[in-house]
Amino acid sequence: MATKNLRNDMEAVLKALQIKDINDGVSTGVHSWKPAGARLESYSPVDGELIASVVQAGKDDYEKVIRQAQQAFLEWRNVPAPKRGELVRQMGNKLREMKEPLGKLVSYEMGKSLQEGLGEVQEMIDICDFAVGLSRQLYGLTMHSERPGHRMYEQYHPLGIVGIISAFNFPVAVWSWNSMIAWVCGDVCIWKPSEKVPLSAIACQNIIQEVLRDFGAPEGLSCLVIGDYKVGELMTNDTRIPLISATGSTRMGKAVGTAVAQRLGRSLLELGGNNAIIISEHADLDLAIIGSVFGAVGTAGQRCTTTRRLIIHRSKYEEMKQRLVKAYGQLRIGNPLDENYHVGPLIDKQAVQAYLSAIAAVKEEGGKMLVEGGAFSGSDYASGCYVKPCIAEVQPNFKIVQHETFAPILYIMPYDTIDEAIAIQNNVPQGLSSAIFSLNIRETEAFLSAAGSDCGIANVNIGTSGAEIGGAFGGEKETGGGRESGSDSWKAYMRRQTNTINYTTKLPLAQGIKFDL
Image 1: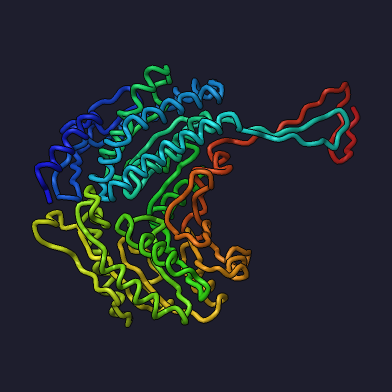
Image 2: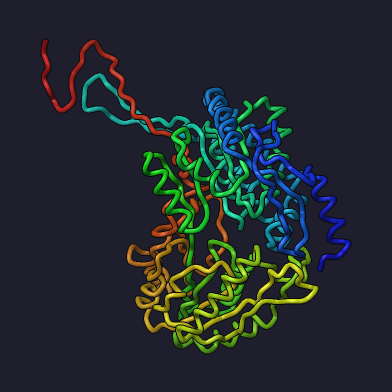
């Protein structure tokens, strides 16, 4: 798989994105420097080849970054919001220019298909467009005072430094969801990307450097700190960072949320998903099979919105089983940069072991493999990260079914009534995404009601995967409760202030209290 053509193509990509053999893992925007930490090597799960290296940040490097970010905020908060939006508009245009090389790097470093890599960059462009419009819509509201000659209103002010901790599965989009909105809100950002995809983060910083310089943005507006969990701990415990936005596992989120709460800071958490699709007796099965298969195997099952469970009406169960087996038999696993393949690799060999362990747990609990799993070997799969998408028949109460495995393992189970299906869907610790395929309006409305799906996302006749920029993205329960990207999620990046103005010569007190001197 490590063909000469692939290597030549990636060399051109790295050159276009200004990725060197050894890169500085710290930047405050235009400026970067060689930090004091150990060297981090980024290997591609596509072919197992070394892409490039990064020198990681140490504690002193982090301190230098945070001081620069503090200084930048004092300047940036005074820039009018529409002008802040203009910076983001220019960033969007730059991302349009660099969409193809950045999308290819995302695909090569993370392992998702090229179309998904390009789609992720398109998400970045879309959030720029959204944020530009938002920069003129940071609305407050007015209220009537109970006191004569007074008026009240609420307004939103910039919050300060936003710390962004992102996961490997979306190496660039999650950063943009947070940073673009934070910047139009008047905040500055410090980004700690996943150690598994550091080059994609450096590429983003390189892309926007020219825009920052030409705009005259304060140094420290966009900061990058690459390092291990210790850097993350510095951020979560730092009282100078009022908001930590963290994306990753539930285990990581609990640690972040606890640390931030102890200092009474704010956290925006986007954590695990264990997403289900209910396939009704009234479903359009042609739609359902497409949504289910793509949801289960896209990004090799490494999305937080990946479809993990299919809850199928008993009358359609056998037919869906047959169609799923047929569809899985048509899947082609291989180089994600080659559009002839449907499924690429897992992120690393540790993920492969987690996948194999999950399959073993299914069998141990009494599950039946409908489509067998396993890891690929041989020269075409030299990275050791390729696995077979598989399907298991299970009971809803299996321990492994309650757990999110970041791999293409699909659990299927039957149901008899819609109430039973909703109960099965909700009976997991996570609450990110959900869907129902049904043409029966009573079922779909029940699914969307207060007694229906308990997830942050509930879809009808589309799968669980994907998030549109206009809607706030996030989930409930162990998913963390945070919301990013659309709707009024911008309020998380600002502080709210209530104002009362007295325009008379008297000072009446609230609730009719008398205080005469």
